[in-house]
Amino acid sequence: MNERIRQLKQQARDFYLLQEDLDCSTKQLHELVESKFAELIVQKCADIGEQYADGNYEVRNQILSQFGLEEE
Image (cartoon, rainbow, N blue to C red; front, side, top):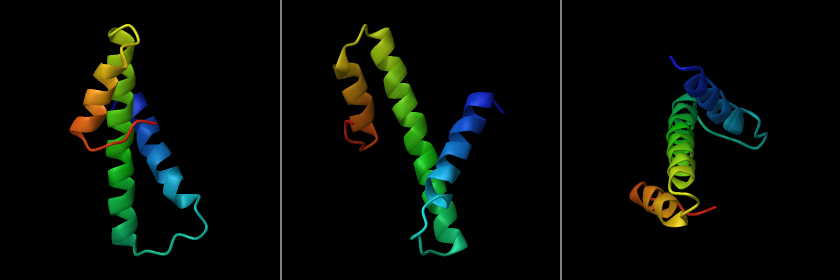
């Protein structure tokens, strides 16, 4: 597995495991982490798309839109 993928997976885990008021089952937590992991991958792809389009935000926005993510 690619080191960057490992980092994104850990970032997704940390996002939820560091929340003190999270009240959910192990299965729900697993689903939340998977969803966050996918979101982080899409965000990274959008960032790369923007870089290769010389800062054209339309590329980034189209990528985010395809996955139902809002602009940040």
